[in-house]
Amino acid sequence: NKEKKYRGAVASRDISHGDTVLLIPREYIISAGAVTTGTALDGIPATANKLLRKVAHILMKDSRYSHDILALSVLWHRLVGQENTTKFSTYVRSMPDSVTGLPRYFNDYERSLLEGTVALRRADERDEGILHHY
Image (cartoon, rainbow, N blue to C red):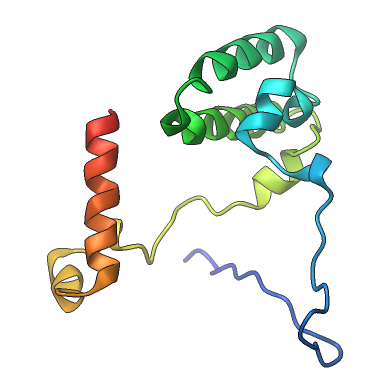
């Protein structure tokens, strides 16, 4: 039985409107743009780094491919991070192995409970976009 893993934060004091709760420096954010410039590829071997940057530059011509760019960089950090530390390997290792709780993964009964809601309509639109994209 695999132990459930949860992530969260607990405030040690009251948080007021406008308080900064979490600040992530820009250089520690994985984005499609950071892949094209190479800042999200620190620690990736030079040959793979160069190839990923080239692919990212090509894919960036169409914004629909930005998720593909991110997926490629995350996969590389996961792969390389098994043996060597990369800038994002610890973060990537903290990601869940599977995703649940999204309408895309609901069975027919669970989807029927959402019938007529905006959530189901948006999920269906997103699925149609993915099918069209690929």
